[in-house]
Image 1 (cartoon, rainbow, N blue to C red):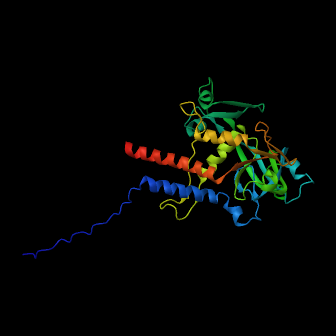
Image 2 (spheres, rainbow, N blue to C red; image 1 turned 30 degrees about the horizontal axis):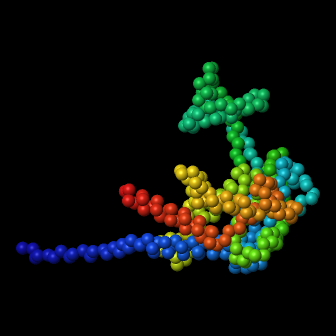
Image 3 (cartoon, helix red, strand yellow; image 1 turned 90 degrees about the vertical axis):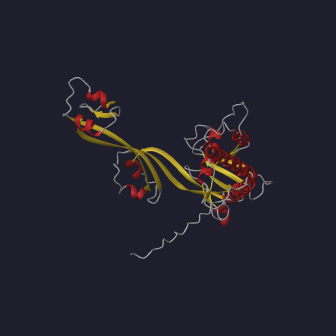
Length: 336
């Protein structure tokens, strides 16, 4: 007879569930996040007041009233690689950004395209015998009367390309000298004090300005510049320590339509903010070193937009959209 055996009770895993956070605590955390977020928006130039913040054409920056900014002197040219390389006024170490469309020619057949392309509505560009181009959906080419699917054809493909290099490196690159390009040439850096630009002595040193360099992309004017700047910066977020566990970044999402009027016809929270900032903006022409305030007169390539925000205004924006986010999350959880 086999001896009796005992079954050991398995150890039970203790799961500690996070307690449901009271609304008051949640509001306090949001307020602390907002305060730290705003405090660190321009933290880089706070660390060293002699370090200038570079204002490029890609992204706006928040800078303190006592900050220094660096504005690259950019020249835009429609030219060719050959003409650019031969320009004796440009030093070999001059930085340049080239934007151009690269053309690739491929010899193939309609049958090969039919076998490799699933979307028959895709537009195909063909090079004709006389050198002209013809564009048509692949389906139309395949269904043409007397179409020889095995005959050799030349397909043209175009790719947008951007290269960042120096004038000296340009001669050694693989870009054809006849290639047409849009060249952005960096002719040096100009450093300016925010205080000297705005000349508003009543503002404290820690007042914040959103700075944006006007480009051809700014088709929606000042309203669009401020809106997209806030959306981008608040969505990027900042790493904050000791505020909320299980959260690496403090950030909020501002919906793209947050500036639209409410269903009642009244202005939205963000719409009111934007309207106020458009009418109180600084428009600095760094080519002529003159200041303007007309929101309808902005010129790409030579103007800098400066929008003043008090720390409290930025905190209010953060809190408003953070609370909106939490309300949506709670509504979603209840509906499950």
